[in-house]
Amino acid sequence: MSGPNSPRTSHIMPNYNRADLRFARGDGAWLTTTEGEKYLDFGSGVAVNTLGHSHPKLVQAITAQAQKLWHVSNLYEIPEQEALADSLCENSFAELVFFGNSGAEAAEGMIKTMRKYHAAHGHREKVTLISFAGAFHGRTLAALAAAGNPAYLDGFGPAPTGFVQCPSFDIGALEALIDDTTAGILIEPVQGEGGVRDVGTDFLRALRALCDKHDILLGFDEVQCGIGRTGKLFAHEWAEITPDVMAIAKGIGGGFPLGAVLTTQAVGEVMQPGTHGSTYGGNPLACRVGSTVLDVVLEDGFLAQVQDMAVYFRQHLARIIDEYSDIFAGLRGSGLMIGLECVLPNMDIVTALREAKLLSVGAGENTLRLLPPLNVEKADLDTAIAAIDTACQTLREAQTGEAS
Image (cartoon, rainbow, N blue to C red; front, top):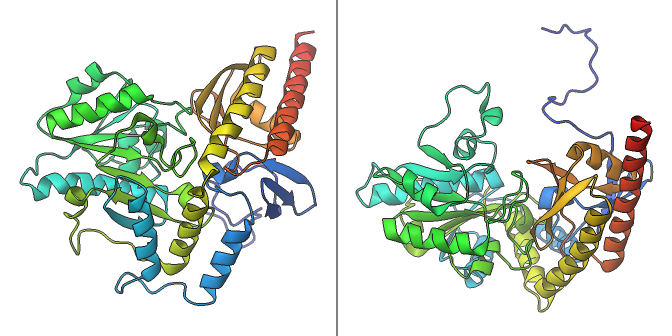
């Protein structure tokens, strides 16, 4: 135990490996440090800053709402919450929405809702949820148990039970795991932390048919891949199927903490008063920001522009992969949710890109994530491409020097 005179460098709990950067302001796709250095932000707060930094419509929305009302709790009707729920349902499969504050909270709410649905219909034995190897659903104990990553669970005692992981995206292997206790299937249409792996439309369609066959629920985690990230409002739309329940967060708040569980009427109506709640969830401030993000993303031409920028960026990244095959091995993901399979350790590449003033994010399976704002401009993509070229040259020269 440290005494009152023990030296310390920070009062912040040491659970993050932080880069030695402090940002003072942001504008569009750019961040500026306290020392005045500019960085191109292609991490977007890990797919959070949908519209980049200091978007004028978001600044106006949050300022106007902050001058009126921040928080009243869910003991009362909240018009801003109703408006956002109406917009989400109008533009998705959903008929009911529950609001929380984060992706983990949304995933937790989805898990509870899927189990409660079966209990409400007289099948309390149906509690098991099947997920997939490489999944990430958040940092609560239930969300970690759903993903099943031993490293994330280590040291936190017994994990919640009722979760099974399928080792691959294989329908036969998945169906073999279904039994009388199965409540449903959880999946990210595009895995984020697990390595930016796109599940694919054929597999999503097969999942829908399998859940219907066995009378179990299909739950999508679109915390990272939703809200336009793949070029559709939700990633599962590419497969032209719908889930029974879905968790969203990150991009819907554009940088403000906001998450939600979206359900069909049949599924969501089982969550009666007392079954679930959130003190801050759906407060006027968060929902006003969320509505503004959604309004912008749904403007005519916005998602088409996301798709165009994704094609442009991916074409140039394909050239980089060919040219630097000693550094990158392949391209993953969908839309502007981009993964580069790495030959070198991915965090070495993250560091080299940061030195070239481009911010990126690591992921599983030795993958590098590039997550630019959805309203990124072509000039910023060109700057990013040049920075990646520079970083690759630096890394190659370092390898050559070590080899000699």
